[in-house]
Length: 285
Picture 1: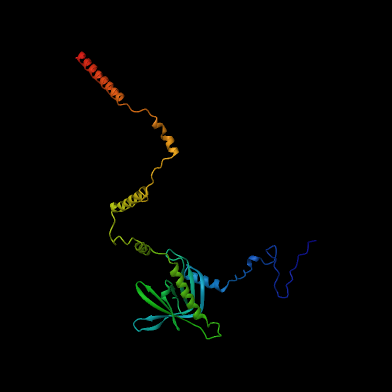
Picture 2: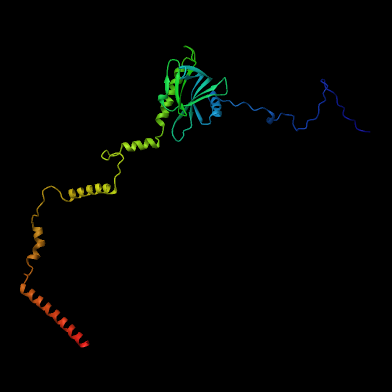
């Protein structure tokens, strides 16, 4: 008798349950979406700014809305540059000239061109009631920009933005100026200021003059050291000094007759030597 075959009964929805190809019907973790990474507003702003400039390392201040104006020398008026958006005061990586670097950036909401200006000197920043004036030079041509920052009257949360960002820009510009390393030209000028005033500018000292001045100083020191101007001290005899001079008093007196005799004997010996030498020479000849 043949075994009965299993019959598939349709469900209420009309779909037949198919056997699973997996060992378990549980959802795998790899198929589940990852939870979003929670980041602060500062981290988000910093990541956006680093896309435009990789040297950005910190955020000093953020103003929600600002408009960039440019002063026109022809019309003597402020003109819109077409850049407006969020304004940032950013810290940059140090380079060979400055220990601290900062810049002002406005991310444009109306176009692809952004405003970026690196702060160089505190004198380049001027604050008025309406604008934060920033002076710069590009390829020898001066440019004047006016930063208008949106702020509402108190008690609005934006009432302090204009004053706060102006103070931060001035502070960062002063840091850059104070932390700038001295250049080779500035170091040379400082060295020239410390040169002896007795030597005329542009005149070179010869080796003779240099060593002659040093020789004169050494001679003067030697005279002062070895020839004091104070009163000379005289030798005063004492019992101790007399003790060392006592043997000289008992020395036998020098006899002139003995000396004469010794000198005569010396001359006779020399005469005998010359006489014998002459006789030997005649004998060989």
